[in-house]
Amino acid sequence: MRKRLIDLAPTTVQARSESWLDLDAAATVEVTSEDKDFPIEASLSAGQTHGWRATGPGSQTIRLLFDERQKLKRISLVFEEKESARTQEFVLRWSSEKAGPLRELVRQQWNFSPPTTTREVEEYSVELSDVAVVELTIVPDISGGSARASLKSLRLA
Image (tube, rainbow, N blue to C red):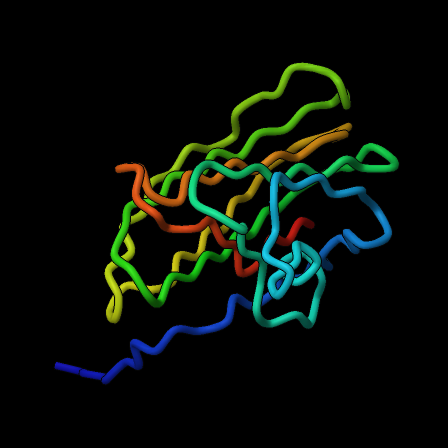
């Protein structure tokens, strides 16, 4: 029998051959709230390390409005929670029209249980054309607790 020890330490998501979309140049972002020390840019820009956080508890929305319609092949989301145990839900939607109806891509729940389960990494392969809007809604605690929504990173390719 062959055996190997594996490292269970969290790893950084590695980009595939596609390059990430420069969201600073390609989109306007709308957000329901942001902690002044954790602005939305910190989760959307390459090289940022601390991410975004809402100012208070409750459902939060992050909406990307593209200057020109985009073709998307990959979506990467990273969430971290190192302080409190909670069940989070997020919904990712998109539209080909800025004022048009949004289509749901994914609805996901995740249980954070610090100190062991503190990081959620989601990678989605998609085939979306003419994308004008991507919207992420986060319910930080489905039981209605005092947790604040946060997002370590959102990348699109």
